[in-house]
Image (tube, rainbow, N blue to C red; front, side, top):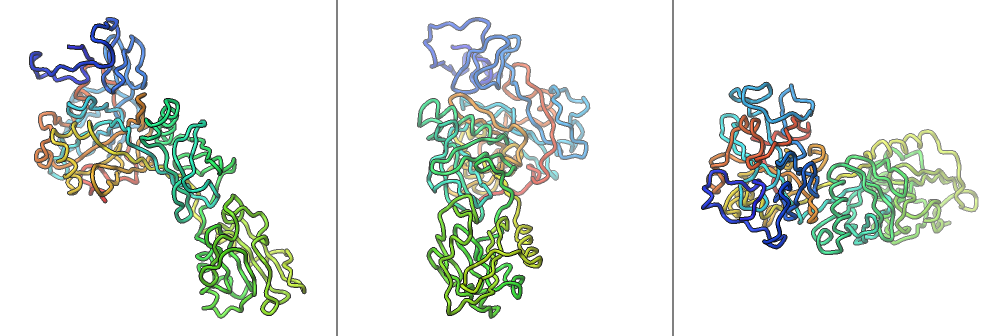
Length: 527
């Protein structure tokens, strides 16, 4: 039988009944150097020389033993949470080990640094038994190798990033596309199996690197075909064509008119809120009518929708209200001489308040720029005050298949059904995961709620991400879970991963994100 590194270990079985695992990556008669270790934590099967790490930089050959380079991350919810310093796995009775009764409820083993279940037939690296309010619980912990995964990125800006369905490039390679705009935000879809495996080797490699950086909250520079250059980073403002964004719009032009109509009343004769999608005109709008405002006679370019609401007043861009205009008067076709009057006071403002100008009509009904009254400036400032900070939100979406489910039970469909029945709480690095309705196990999680450096890669290429399944012990048994592999948390502290015969990298104890519910005993966030 081909010699492996015991990451697939079945120490309780006699050699005669251990299933034979054949290495298909090279001819059977090719011999590996005696000082190398073959790592079977992923399909690449690296042969690692002493003092070196594998292609993923997650496993290394240290004195002839396979060592997990990154520490396992545990969450501790007590006030005395550790500083994050990496320490070895320790024996029971050592300070910091939850040996006392009930202390295990304060710890949660995450999948970050835990290792994987590849090649599928073995239990997850950690299957942890604990108690929550007197109830026996089990948490199955692993790192998944995700080929079927992507990121949904929400960018809070009115700036035009690119046409819907336009390709998005990183280092010249297509890594995703622009999807639908949502209220005040542009949406991107990045990564996915077709970019990871369906294109050239370079496309797959660049896509994988880009996804790892995004998941680990690092900045990524992207170019959108027919659109903008944008730098995105989870939890940070986007940078569009070299300019950092500051504000997310308060609403569309129509909504802005409605929100602030009463405040403008008596100070202005007309307000035009410039917006790429729905430009609002106060006196024509229902809000102006309810206030009995006199019509101004302004005529706008674009397609009139309902009263006071106009579409397509300009092309998309990075100017006023997400349009391509720098001069707001460019969208004004003229004035109805039977309705307008000299001295009419006009405010033109964008949906964020970042652009605003004050005009007064002269005797020829031509708008002339004038200093803005202080009372009107205060309302413009209030529009800006009501705009939330512009941020990038990065959501990881992954399909949990093969080895993930086999690491829980020999009958994977029972895990899927238990999740759909709300018997299993799914988390990623301890962060709550939304489970999509429908077939399979498709999870979505905000990377800002996950521990630092939660994501890794393997050069297949694929993303490595943490995932945990928490349930009552009786439900774990009912779905055919690997009950013989359940270990109390104190034993986890002592010995590390179940299948690691080498020296484990150690553990790091961190505080959970204040935004997250405690994963054990918390209510599942399911669709």
